[in-house]
Image (cartoon, rainbow, N blue to C red; front, side, top):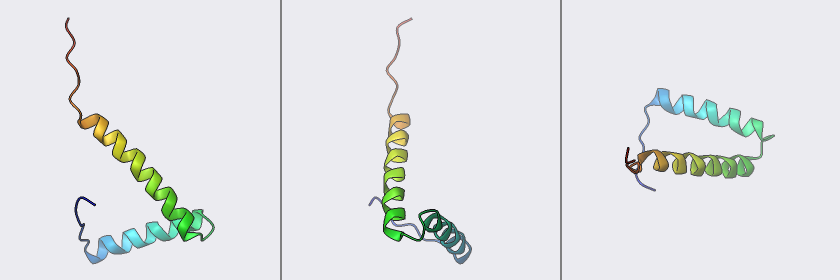
Length: 60
């Protein structure tokens, strides 16, 4: 883990509501929801890293 995020009470409530909805999408299966979120975050991290890489220069 790169860093720890600190949330205020409003952010924590919004995150809790989103988490409840996400778990509900998985029929209440918290482990399944967690695994899917980890996969989605992995894909997002890969895309962000690809964007951050310097683009090779074209001769032209």
